[in-house]
Length: 170
Image (cartoon, rainbow, N blue to C red; front, top):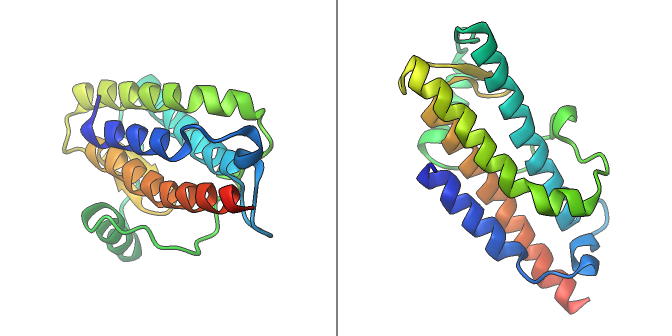
């Protein structure tokens, strides 16, 4: 498994380890609970899996030319490892009430499956070829896709840790 994705799995496991159902459901007004944060991540992983499966079916990269704004965003997120706060989640990745047990049990499997699909495409096309467009960052290579999920997931891991701490005192 990719080292970034392995680090992400470890961090998410640590952030949610031992949290009760009540803690996982606790929320600040207008914010997501821990279960919804994990569901959001789960949905991003399944979306990436579907994209890479389509890529394998078509047999060619599915990318557009990156705009200047996309190149800047990629530099910030991928190269600098900074995930800006306050950005609206795309509707496809908004929590929709999947069963909490399903999300809690399957998010790890989705990371593993995503890494496997990315690796398949990387083996076929090479590590330096842009393979698939991200909806905000534009065309990304296999390495950049993994790094995106790491940076994005670590952003949400901080949220999970704050929720864990706040839910324990309430």
